[in-house]
Image (tube, rainbow, N blue to C red; front, side):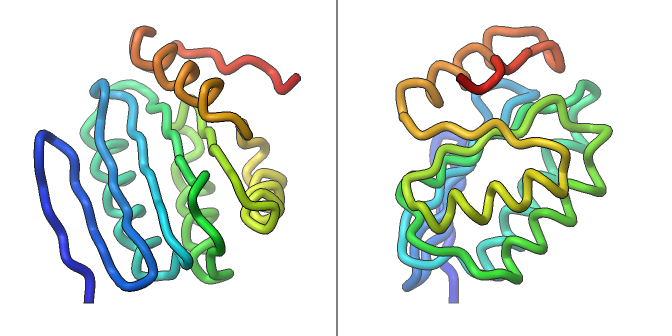
Length: 149
């Protein structure tokens, strides 16, 4: 069973497989960070709830940043759940970015990106955090991710 805590606008869920934390540094920016051995369907459903909450409470398109640098694996049903959400919300998303640290996670994100028409991928924390800052400093829905180098 997951446990949850709320502090300073940050929501955190923990389970034996890891920890999911999310926060909104701006009304139109959502950051989700997962750390742990396995991102499963239970964590995916919590992420879906958080994303829907932000998307439908914001009049502008939103920028979503997934910090998955410390994610070791994620299940195919979790990937399918998030990909289907992305397809449903594509007109409400300004950008979708993912920081990865695992080759297996990166491969899964690449496959999801093909289905979604593109996900901005990062492999360094500094570049990822800079992108989050740029999105926060932009007006809602106006952040323009740089093309991959």
